[in-house]
Length: 505
Image 1 (spheres, rainbow, N blue to C red):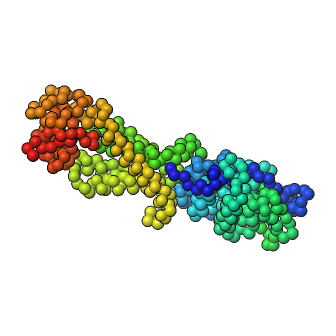
Image 2: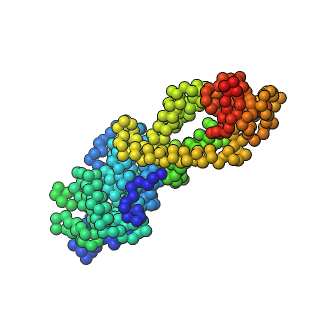
């Protein structure tokens, strides 16, 4: 699949925790006010930590829990996007990110932030241990952040290259400017959150609240859970965190009350890892699948090429489903397209309607599967930007299939396998049809030479089958349609079939 979200540097940018960091708990700096939280204050904060947006309810809240563990990478995006769409479809009340990460890919991070913004319910992050670098940005994109007391940290979010080295200063300025604007847009109503995130990524930014310096210039901000939940200003407001909780269940109990919620947990499995690989090579798999189906339609009967082609295309559709891009609907459209194409070739030969409808359904299913459509969003409302990548992937796949078919048409006839494709020994061996031309032994893989005569056993409009010496062959009428029972003569080999003419003409 063509890459998305890459910057113009030599290597993709990541959000890393390797840069020098500072925390408001440094005893020699005028930042000790950030840690002057007593045990009594912490307890009071935990007891009143429930977000104001969450109102008392009569039924248990439905909460989806998504693990964000380890490196921020494509599989985490897939499982988050799939969980969010399922949560929307099932009218879930909240989604919680169970987070423990050192950071990862910037492009994936931005996609995850955008996905969270689409969820109409409440979003939480529970920092079990670390929400560093890219993890801090993703946490900032949720409505409320909770921390495990005594061990949780968040911050250190400077952008570096994928190798962990510094990036060009101009590129750093561009990335910082973009991310600062993005965070401001996603944190409206949170007095300190945008500045806290800026202090985590911009070493040149001095972060002050009143006369208290929380981060001097030249360093990056990293906060403990207790520091993130400290209140500042008038009226007082918590710096970043909504509260402290020893575990995720205790956090939800603070918000919804004991027994006031039902959790559905997702697990990151091998399928997300496999889907990442599938989607990276999706155009190649599609092209190979389309090529094999084209060869199958040119050959008599139904065999290995058709089965292999359909399997490759099903794998592509499955990859889009696991990636959270599509549901079951594109697969249904795909099957409908195959049915229409089969009807065109086998039943309503020559009827343009079935063929066109089949092609539209067939290719439309892949456009649909690769487009990020959310529940409740009309397909007509999908932006051209969202459609651009799927369309490019399909064009690339068609180019692969077209080139492959041209090469197969040129070189395959020189092999014995070509004879097996064209020759169909469906006629009983004792059913020999007399013809005025040469004969080929039933079951042979060599093709009849030009001048060999046979009989049309189906209508050729223009494709059909002919019989020569007890063997059936896929054939194509060269000039005009040929009716069943007419005598034909072989004039050549073309497109995985014998080229034939009506003897009378």
